[in-house]
Length: 240
Image (cartoon, rainbow, N blue to C red):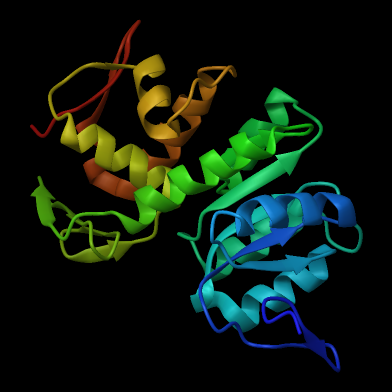
């Protein structure tokens, strides 16, 4: 019996260990991803459509450590699944698998809370490398709590509080904020931010950064003014 994926009267069996949820309507694609990730020691849970993905996530939320989510699927498309999962969790890493490669689609996805994009066709080895890079960042946070002008970052719990009040950030927003504050008073170019926060060379428009900064400023409220725009360069975190 496959202990990772099993259904009984349409009810999902609870996971016995942390797993990656792979959501794609193509059986061959799911098998390809599953085989490569399992070869690296990861447990995999599968869903063949959007509705099943939501059902699985609702029943195993605490055990799913990352989601690989296709865009074009029956019943519920990837965008709809993304919206519903983000209502349940702002922090679970979500990588979108898309054949479109449209810049506007990617910007739209980042607005909804996507952490990473991988365009089809892709190298399975590259996909595994990106999955493991995100998991290392999530699982390898230091046990420290630091305060930056009323913005308190707890790296162990990956939580943010503003003057003692918790706020919810997506994984990418969290990583962007921590990168900015850890480089306080340093002007950072958009390219440098992309290479360090996204952890690879992103060939899209710099509006990706601008979009995330805009959302981050909004969530930080009055503290959003600490993120300064450096004309012609990028951004700087400065508490004044």
